[in-house]
Length: 283
Image 1 (cartoon, rainbow, N blue to C red):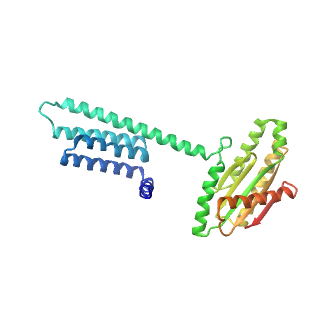
Image 2 (cartoon, rainbow, N blue to C red; image 1 turned 60 degrees about the vertical axis):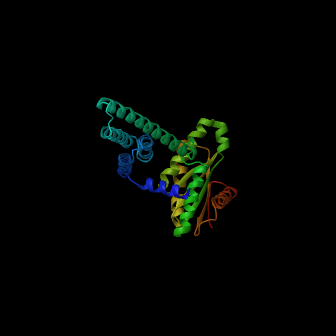
Image 3 (spheres, rainbow, N blue to C red; image 1 turned 45 degrees about the horizontal axis):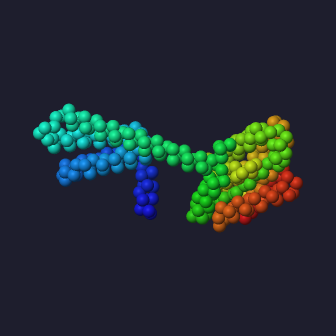
């Protein structure tokens, strides 16, 4: 399993032209073996390997090129080993059929890979706001904790809760509440960087992971965040507030649960102190 993971990691690092070149090289090796060993049918099946490999890691167009190359290779091989009673037209027809089969396999593999990629994205995304959900946040946080452990980088976790959101939701309806959640998610994305993690943990609670950020950098971000959220709430006449808890980690926490627990504790400190506040703790 470890060997397969390394091979996959290597293939994912290759560029699309590199994958295409690798697929064509494998085809050439199969063709040469076919000329040498004459194991016709078994080697024909081996041609699906480079076709599927290129389809998975490079996409549809390169895989169709490999499919055409596979069909052409088998056509040339048939010509070199042509039986007396076989015509060039028959070999050409066989090559076209094989090319069509390879192309169909390529299309099916590309479609399968796209569906898997879409499912992976959806499983880690909040369906309402489009940002990460709890699962996506945990994966990002776990990777970031490991990175900080290796590099010694700083890390700040943030928990945000919308004050009196339930009452607002009950009074104005769920569609209005959904609009508020989406707008808040948009503000969170706007004030953070691409390297930061932004997630809706559940209900009206959000989490942020500010990478390479100590207390000073995080306080600047949270200052802009509160300013933008309160301006948006006042402009839209939302009867809600924002309780924010943040924890700066000089050393990475032991686990994602420890990270979330610390940020959640800071957020409840903000709520218990009168809501609408930001509480910052040092881990």
